[in-house]
Image (tube, rainbow, N blue to C red; front, side, top):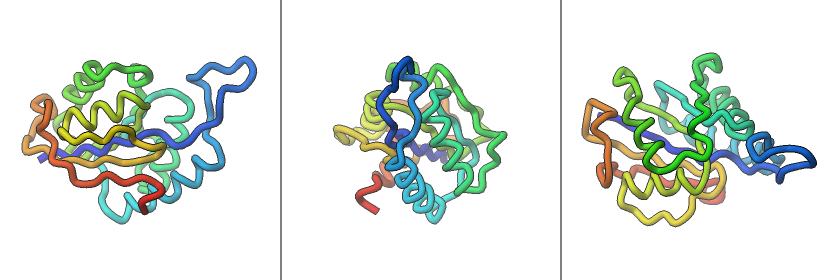
Length: 162
């Protein structure tokens, strides 16, 4: 069995003068969201692998989650192609995850992270708020086998629901 937790990065500030969207940083609200959600997640499960977009706000989100989950920061996989990924490219990325990992936490961006959660589970989530977590199980031993409507939705939590 494989378990995938999808996280939308925490709340971030708007772009500042001369800053690109890729460079946006977390807001004070985002830091509170991370504390709430990473503490909740840490009470529920452990993870084998943490993957995040290489955009600044997602790297910050991943660093904080790693700290609370006692996941080695140096083992976080930061992947540039998760930023502005399409549903198809993000699914393809997940299908290439090493099969040695059974529980993966992936931190990304909307709208793709919500679309992926809906695609894999068949649930109409409409919009994942910042720092929300969708966890699903798959009855397979291979990430390559994961596809549409095969995810069994376990949780959909967001900072306002904890």
